[in-house]
Length: 89
Image (cartoon, rainbow, N blue to C red):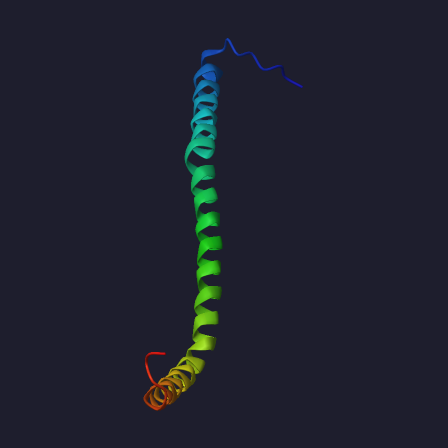
């Protein structure tokens, strides 16, 4: 088995370029890739929460018209009761 001689000019530059390349890749990973992935994960969580809220609203939407009708009927009944009873004591 041959020993690797780092003083050999034929090996010095490829090893140096490889080390610099790995350093650049490591810096990119820690300063660009990882924070971006964290942001993507947070945005996915927010999107899921907003979609759940939207589903809840859409499920309750049909009840809204029914509640509006009940409110209108109750207001009419209140108006009719106000006309029966005097405003002051």
